[in-house]
Amino acid sequence: MTKINLLPWRETHRREKNNEFYVVLGLCAALAAGAGWGGLQFAKDKVQFQEKRNARLTTEIDLLQEELAAIRELEDTKNNLLARMEIIQQLQGQRPQIVHTFHEVASRLPDGVFLTSMKQVGNKQLVIEGRAESNARVSALMRRMDRSDYFDNPKLDVIQADKVDGISTFKLSVIQLTPKADGELETDNGI
Image 1 (tube, one colour):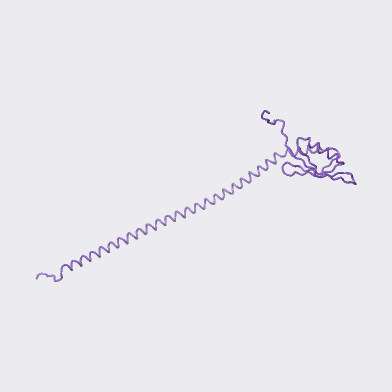
Image 2 (cartoon, rainbow, N blue to C red; image 1 turned 90 degrees about the horizontal axis):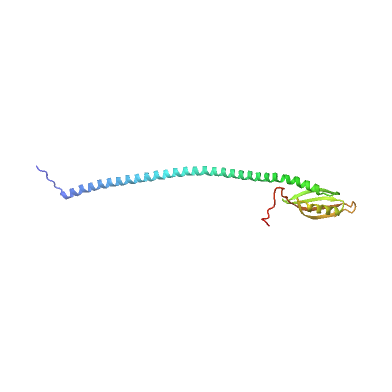
């Protein structure tokens, strides 16, 4: 007996095509899901890689910040040492000046004048306090200081005469000079 298909062939064909369509649709959906999942994993890997790089850079930046702090501390120490060395050099340069100052004061001191204190104010001013047998002796001291190469512009700040003893107490200030050495000549630019 021959096989007779009683179903209409178009309906069967449509079902087969629908089945094929659903299979292809499923495969496309699976392929799209796989591509999406793969893209998501790729993006996650890139993000993780960048986060690792950022963490490494942050660690390196922290190390460099510590090194910069150490360098700043060393620079501060260096600047402090240089300042100290400069002060020491200034003091070394002033050592002979102090000796000359004391020698000059002692050699300019007239008879009858006694010093009670000497104080340096700033870099250039010297304040001298003492006692003298008379005001004329204080005047003589000021004239001698004015003639000195190491002192200039003596000014009498205070003078008080004690009526009982006849002794004057005085306070005067002078400007200290640094005279040029014998080998140094003043330049006058030919004038």
